[in-house]
Length: 342
Image (cartoon, rainbow, N blue to C red):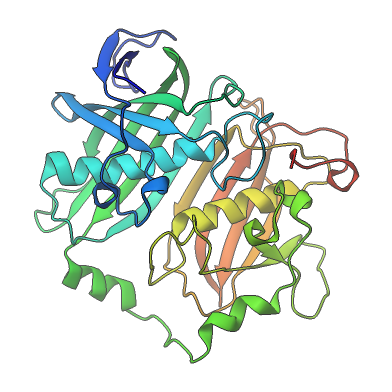
């Protein structure tokens, strides 16, 4: 790839809100260093450039791979909206280090996020897809000992706005993180890595995937499913994307993907519900302890054209994450033809 003049515009901050935008030159030549976005593998870095365009305002370039977030669906499917979510997540880390002076050793805590696709994503191409984020950072705390920001972005592909995404995060000094992370946390047990083996995976096609390794939902260990649409979370610490690097807790992106899968399989007539998503993270999830995901119909919102599914992740009575997934629903049963091209 070569440097390209790519549009960017306002992210809900009074900027140009038309679908097209003025030019901003960014480089799409090479991925940024993996340390800049806290990744271990070069292949997992989506960002290629970032520039400051004003006070707390930035443009960020991303290069999406020719497949989905988990590299699972095939060339005939559209791009995966989770690539937008992951691009915004990586942007929060990059901007914190590069423009706000956050030290490289500071852990990041994801608090909440949401995104809206305003237009369908384009189909896969023979080459990676260049994407531009026009971003505004909004401080969320006045505490000089804590760095908190909300990143509000508008995303563009081929110069046209395709949607919006926002993310709220905290960056903490290592000692402060340790206090918050392990305050009241249950002790880990020996042999913890075997916990996920108790959950037999759902069929991959039922959750929109092609491979067992990407299935994050399993049947309850006793094989009995309740009427409330619930599943056991499966955790594979060897997964090359969801566990690109070591984590002391269940990663937020893993919980989001699990909630997407629960919305798919929990609604008999679902195609792909991911047009809107909002999520709040309230507790750290322990890797060694079982997590159950519950799905139910969300309250009808007269102002929203998409029906919704509420998905909640629970661990020993604690809510880890609460999400609302909105999207498109049909009369087809997912067991009778649902699934991506593999």
